[in-house]
Image 1 (cartoon, rainbow, N blue to C red):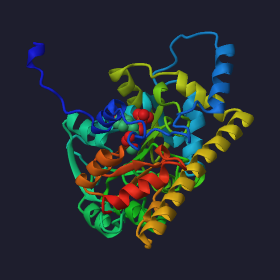
Image 2 (image 1 turned 30 degrees about the vertical axis):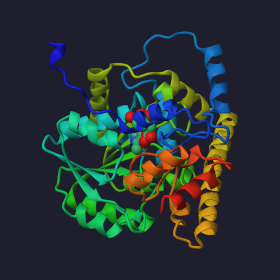
Image 3 (image 1 turned 135 degrees about the vertical axis):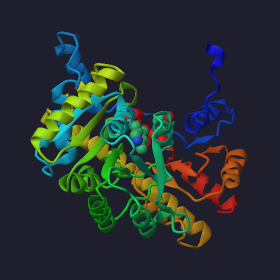
Image 4 (image 1 turned 180 degrees about the vertical axis):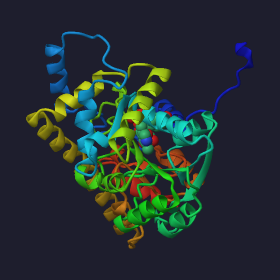
Length: 393
Ligand code: PLP
Ligand code: TYF
């Protein structure tokens, strides 16, 4: 029977990782996969994470199962971090999931349970796994305009025009902050218009929040999510992979914000049901690291401080790259780099230009010209700037 299987398309970002590893050139530069790296190219275990793991190791007396929703302390710590005072806790159903991806996957499944014929609208472009998961589930997908290739910023008019076509019972996927792959986020006025539009059409917002704390601050990066959650029902898929640096621990949370407590209770049961169908109990170790950190004043302050070092380090690289390009080109046309948020920027290079930078300079970025800013350092930043100019950007 196995001979009935056909090859599956490879994940382009992960294939790029393999191509980078196979490149023998010592001067090669990896701006591909979205993993934070420090100036030495390391993805460190955060200080507070290491300390929390020590405390867990010392204090944990059992490895027995937790609950289908995961250890409640995890949701009780993460929901307020994300939602602040925007919604009463009792109106929020939440389950731990294997990574943000697990939350995305089950959010889509919940949409299908609530609204079997729903179209899920996604920004063009979006994270490729959104599309592949939706296709795998056999759900109807439509793109909405999001990114203006000319200005390398959000196409707010196009976005609002396309979202005017959503129907009651559809769901609309939004990146809560630090859009992947472009780095372009809507401004607060556009966010408000999007929220009003979706409410007036009867569509469900589904927020993917994978980079909280990587953009402007923990508070500001949560602002759009809080505004939408405060305005009615929505789903939120949160990842702790990046902001806690616990990628391989597979730590995520799926939230359903309901209009009242009774609906939230039913939603809670349905989210636990989805966990049970897919894997039963979610992973606990990463979730326990997060609840340990957020529940301890000292660890929390140290985590916030290190996250802030990471965020401002990436900002410095963005500003340095834009300044170097200003110097080389005598123009400010690359200043969009400082307006983009988070780890990623889409440079607006053609596939041929991306290929030329790889061939001639050993610079690896995703084929759509997305760079991971954290892959740069003070030494490689001018090399990228020169390669961009040489490629004709
Ligand atoms: N959503 C987006 C947009 C992402 O970039 C990521 C990834 O890294 C995720 C979700 C989920 O990540 P993870 O499953 O590693 O938590
Ligand atoms: O977009 C990225 O690079 C990150 C990491 O299948 C990632 O989100 C990439 C591919 C993938 C899973 C995670």
